[in-house]
Image (cartoon, rainbow, N blue to C red):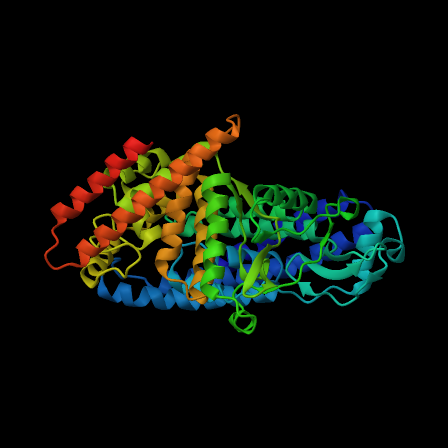
Length: 530
């Protein structure tokens, strides 16, 4: 009943939006591409309405009459989650484009049930390539020249095809090899219809289930897609990132050819490499997966904590390993369309949060929770980021003890959906990017077989260096060198105390009083150093 009532409303809205797009667009090829976007948009909207209607009805009837704290409810809920996630997976695969992007975005959020994250993580950012003639037309329209006047050679077969663009290999007249990223025709019009559909469905679900609020997530997704569709922005992000890591010989960012770059076409230096998680390739080239994992987390740790300029889509296809011989390598960072510039205060508070989480400084974590606007829910930050509870006695990077896990499960069961929703709604927008990026990186590190402590200690080191970073580089070389030494000493101090605490925590005779004393010593040491 719910589905039948809302489908006509949605389709009418989609048709009206599409008609407005056509009316405000010029005739000719552009008008035909808009009309095509409208036609496909209505079909995708219909499919989305049917799927979401089915999912809402499944939750409504499967859980009807069950108390949220009952054993039956806890058994039924994961079953409904899994059925619904599979339905959404089919929807995203059938609709493609922005639905695939949305599915990937949701799968990377740590707050969604595991049934959704594991199921939707199967989505591949691949698409059926557009016809070469369509791609050729986009290039020629953007530069006002024939393709052979722009490129000496241009491979008609794409080397990659994703949801919003495909990449071709070419050669300039000076024999420079390039990778040319070309946006699919009519994509902006298609996005407007798809986002409108998603917004309508989000509001419809929130009306049936008031505790579920998706507005913030959808807003963040729309912002990221809008940025990703502007290739000139991507080129600027690329250059800024290259400048941030200009002294890092391991990090490689392809050079941008601005004379051959527009909103719809991006021309870059062609860089050879394999996906960062290609273990067979790493073994054949005698490259250590652990060293790759360490270099990767150092790269993103510096991005987050020091520069505050974060690549928002670090999936394996966007990070290549390029062999340099004798087991050495460089990390090639691609696809700079989605970036987040962290607020300066947020960056510094986030650095403080990581220092507090490593030390399990409960008072500081709760204090920062107030600044982040999440209040009492700040106690869950260590669980989310480090895998330890705020009262944990386990060593850093080790598995949470069984008793601690049971206590945490019982505590989480007592939370209502509006508690979780309030927590997510209260988080600063920058946190969404941090959570998504961290989730993707954890997955890659797991595939590379990196120990858990590699990520934790690298983040701790970067957080300390981030606290020393000056907003304006007005200090001289000697002052900067002193700050760098100071940060390294602070980190070494941190490592020593972490190791001692870990050993004492494992020892049978270790008491919490001794552990707390050591943590106090560390905090005092930081105070003196800072």
